[in-house]
Image 1: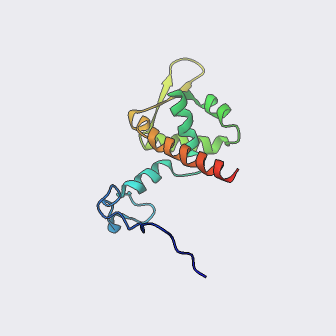
Image 2: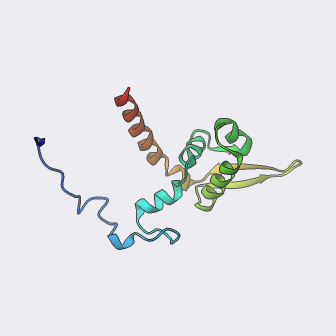
Image 3: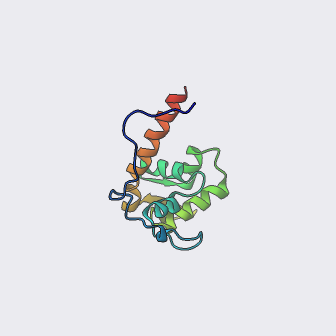
Length: 134
């Protein structure tokens, strides 16, 4: 027995906000992404990256030690890799603090702050999913 849905059937959005990403914009891994969704995924890609960004959205700026304490399950190597990735993508800036011992402070950029609605959407979707399965 098949199940039939009631109401209208969803059709692909050919004119909406996702329509401006033609199939030829998808590129093989390693090439520079051109599809807006792929660009966002390249920025937030990798386990822990969204959680590191979440910490910056909560704080605005942080030292390596503060981030390490906030995300204790995250290894030093992965945290270093994620900070380098987010710096490369222009989401955070690395500032060396004068003095001894040398210290580094990372600060969220305007481009990074613009990712707040993306993270907020992830938070809301995850909260609804968590609550639905509880």
